[in-house]
Image 1 (tube, one colour):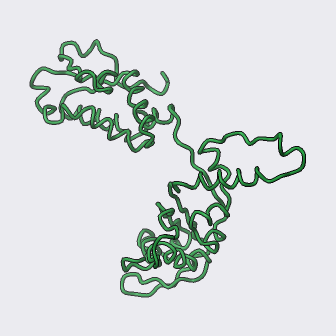
Image 2: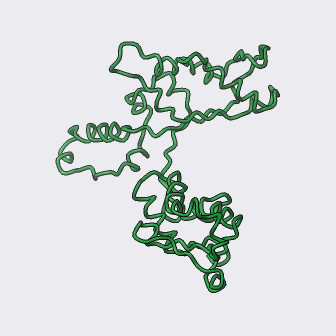
Image 3: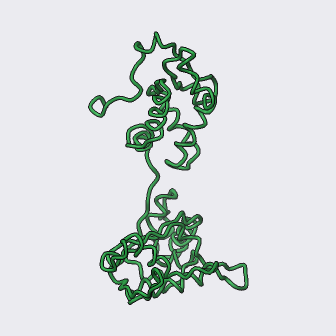
Length: 272
């Protein structure tokens, strides 16, 4: 909102996605990512990018008719049936939840209070206990928090889920690279231990599925400019090993005559 675009512009985008069909747009979904960046700023005199935008969103979340400028004409949209999904990392919110829980636990509750102790909670357990009061303490205005009907906590992907994203889903990083290698007449083989090493590195960095593509590209980077010539050099396959993923060894180049003896890069769903 502070760069000159009014908050109503999101409805114009929704109407554009609906092909100009107002009725269809009125039953659409508005997804606002990095919503936590709109929290109130307490260290500056005038907060033009946080609380101001929150106040601007109140009318849209109220379910009232909204006037939208769409292709040089004014359109009135009913926002009462539009689903708003607002997501964000909300860094520091778990600390507020812990402080609230510890504050309530320290209050005397009779003779049992001295013997009762609150078990330490991890970050994800703390986020499961988020209340509207915690969001207000985080920096969202009470009027905005009250317009949401639910608070949902998303947990990090597990090891098995990351492995699925890495190699099994359509368009996964490894499958995309496998097809790219095949376009150059070379097969990319990634055995189970190499896939596990990629998942281990992704878990260690704590960045979720986003980091998988980068890790795959980093591991295959030494062959980025050689790939078009590998087939002419007699290479039939490139094998990605655990040592290569961990940075302790180069990628293995398999001569074309030995390719048939190597395992297929990805097991089928039935084999899994």
